[in-house]
Length: 452
Ligand SMILES: Nc1ncnc2c1ncn2[C@@H]1O[C@H](COP(=O)(O)OP(=O)(O)OP(=O)(O)O)[C@@H](O)[C@H]1O
Image (tube, rainbow, N blue to C red; front, side):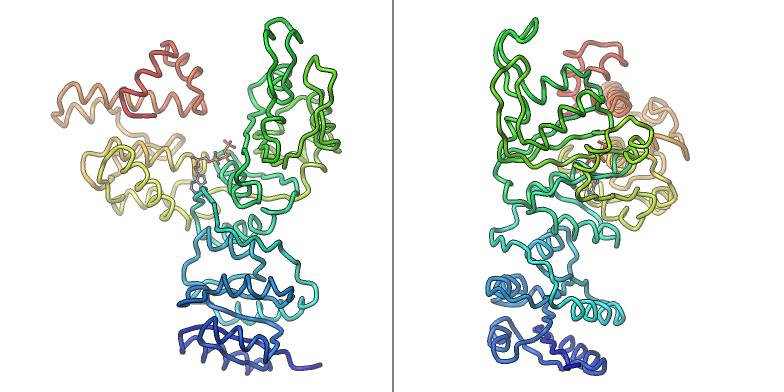
């Protein structure tokens, strides 16, 4: 077997030397380059089987190098190294066709395994479309746990394909965020991303939402209406809670997906569309298929690629970065300067099981930013939706703090409204109903209290 050649590119001498020693010891022929320019020259001269390159380098960085290699049609696997494992870097790396990326400081065995895999797959590396545009991701997915890193890689891999993706995960794990990340990292990014929530909509309404209708199609159809399928032309349509649709709508949806065409309700003309389909569910759809509640053929159509987002309790190491992200977000929104959680409060966050996942954590942070008196959030400011610790009634806390009555009332209103919105899945009309006020009053309160 011929000795495989590895080219290591890094502007840091220590890293070059280290990889040189380790990989030579593993039996590879190793060559090094100090920057992207030198690498370009060595690619020609040396024809490496695998390239390992740092991302951040002056002038020509790892991404440019990767693009250069891909644009010449070479199948050489490129392993990117970075000290910053952000979502964007991960998605971009995989999207541009990196074999993999590794976060510094890395573990020796991890790198050796990676190189072995790259060498083994030299001739079968998947070719990725070389989108040279900048990353338009408008989606900030936080979390650097191994499972989330793997997810970013998958997003990068599937983004630019037309493949239908089924995103599975418990409620509040970030399925919609992932759907948006796929759209904004695809070539459809400048076209519409249309979401349709399949839950809570009766059949006829869902169908008219999806396919639109002609004037006079039914009582009340006073003018023609375009459906979401038409509106999403050239873009992406995202079916949230797909597991909730009835068997009869499933049949119509299957036709639209399969044939890429449909009829408006009451219409005679067949409309052709080009849409990318993404769907999400917090149910085990496989189970619904078995039980006869979900069509197997539709399931297979949707489940071309399956992405699973693990619940937050299985990736608690992501909590600190999520908390930091939400504190920044809500400090800005409510013009507060909350610095963080006290030690005890942090312990509570890490101990809790998060049945409502990231959404629950976000709501907790939002509420805590609003409610805390100081700049550090203490256990009293924390209220879990389910379990652990129930905060003392807010009114008691506030009145004991000698605050002006107006502020106490506003704080209480804020808390009660937030809770009602949360309990009603952020549906304002249901929240208004549960609060016993009309929708308009709720809107006015939301505005007045800065909860928009
Ligand atoms: N990894 C993450 N980083 C930052 N924000 C997140 C993350 N995951 C979820 N969120 C936030 O949590 C909230 C819930 O996320 P999202 O709506 O995407 O969840 P979901 O799984 O689609 O929920 P559901 O099943 O209830 O529709 C959103 O406000 C989203 O921005």
